[in-house]
Length: 529
Ligand code: G3I
Ligand code: 9MR
Ligand code: ZN
Image (tube, rainbow, N blue to C red; front, side, top):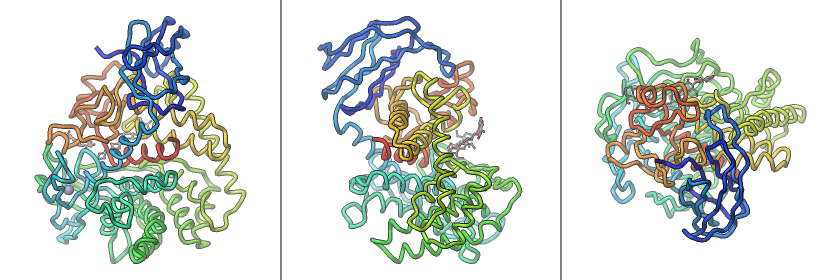
């Protein structure tokens, strides 16, 4: 049986805060054991505290004083933790693996054995796609498979790239990572080459005539657990949407400055695409937002509130191009309602960061309002952290589909407050969200495939299933108390919200992966590690 003593399974750097969580009510004696035998610290814990998200009593064991590099285990009562490392560069490998995932998700190209390894596949999804409801076909090859499925969705793509751009801005060392991709060794940093692969596809998803952007390209339904070249049903381009067009404008505007030094023509192409999309986005009003047209059942990225996407676009357009119009439009939105979010559905925070970081003139009152709202948001999260023994900003209602993305996103909100106030308590709180993902969680698993001792083995990811081996470096969705698939219903009914997770191939609502979950984690790691 797995132990009930949860630690960060990937490890700690010498100066990091180190907390193990023991599941139990009565105080226990604990020891920290180095290299298998040496007891380097011991003590008696406090008493268990009830946690409504796990329906357990838990005790925190703080061993932050352990700073010497080595391999350790924690023993509390008769329970041992998994072994973990303390070392300076302990996160290097996981970072690279999380980055490399994007390469492995490439569509429309052959992944050779040399670069693709166990996930090598022939060229896929390279036939022209039918524009829904017409007899017209368009070539939209390229980009990354979204997730465990092989669809390609603009909303998902745009927020993924936004998070990756923020990751680069917070940690320039990402520009030096050798991702072992075919473009490695060129002047353009690998991460920018990889992002460009997605941008080139996104550009194809914009209608030349109108500047509007198609919502997605997928087959009519989801295929079996096969490698992508075997999904050969007709590709369908679904109608334009406001969310896709606004997110596209925001993302293209953001991308311009990263590519200007390497490829001015490409940067100009994106600037033009952004402006055209922004100019038409509001004309794509569909009541209730995008929904699947008849006969198509793939992901919808359905979004009832389309204002935050326009808010984000206005801010990025202003930051990139400095036109007074964009400034005014963003400020008008802010004066009505300040929005937040770093996920696919709510993107307001990207807008806030853009406005606060532009080098063009801004209105001090608007900036102050934004900063105050961001700190207020973080303060609400801090309250939740204090009430949760795992030091995460979640209560029992927060474990929804893709909960691990919201864990990462909340970490970024806390980081924002740290940047604004300089108060380290927010930074410390943000870091605990990473510890949770790395293994200090009541599911007792490291939520990144291929890492930790208690690993995710059966992710809902078609190439992994086809290769019979979990692709490494994928952040999985995590607990979802909504029980949105039959396996979750079977395995998790009656469990506390924080434990509604099952490592089963068919549990897409708890055990899938997506490009924008990996990017959310990379963004937070770049900010706080
Ligand atoms: O926003 C509400 C919230 O207000 C409410 O309290 C909560 C309670 O359940 O639900 C929240 O909505 C959930 C939403 O995710 C939050 O992001 C929905 O219940 C939930 O069904 C929805 O799940 C989305 C899922 O598609 C189904 O639409 C996931 O976020 C989204 O990541 C996922 O995306 C899929 C793509 O469609 C296809 N490709 C794979 C990808 C990952 O599973
Ligand atoms: O594989 C699909 C996954 O990417 C989606 O997130 C999920 C929800 O839309 O659907 C998955 O596909 C399943 C489908 O919805 C129902 N039949 C089984 C499919 C594979 O598990
Ligand atoms: Zn493909």
